[in-house]
Image (cartoon, rainbow, N blue to C red; front, top):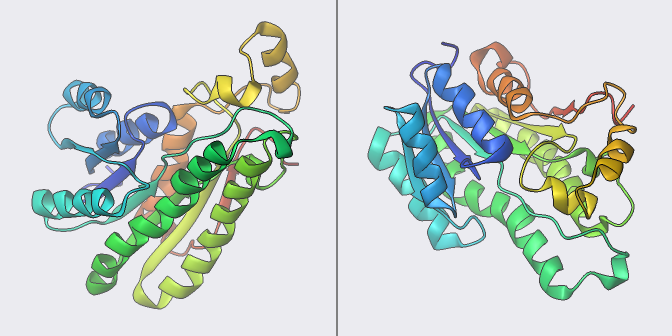
Length: 248
């Protein structure tokens, strides 16, 4: 029960890595708000887990929607101890000059602007309490970029840099900020990363991961639990690779 008594918001928490974090946090005693565009899927997960898990239909790229998310958490529990910026999108693999402006704008809005919007709504609350933990879910793409994922790579590199900048600025206020850099996993984004989901493409992708498997939602939940718990009270500004050795 390492998160007993804590409250957490997990964006993109209805599926994939986000759902793994929600499940782990609930098991460790946290009260969790699943913030996701797919409120129906979020409600299915909340119903499966039971008491202490709530849902907010949230567009993380929209300021009023993000503010409503933060307000709901405060209305429910009076405080926000943990914020997980997990929601993310990618564009399909293609030469950088062929990515549409629409896809570029979507990647920047969901992967970059959302971190600004959640900080704008949540950081003042954490500062006022003198404590808090923020975890940004970036990607190995932001550390060791893959060809043809150019603007997605850039958005995750931005997230790692933002994590360090936030950590330095917020440390005097008692707020820790860290990031996770997973390799691709069995999530809705996997097919988008590979371009096509075939045994051959999977084998090619897995050949770049020394431990020989994808990141799992459970891997992410375990790492997130540590970084957001009091066990990591001296850890801030860390961008932890959960990637099976991909970035070595």
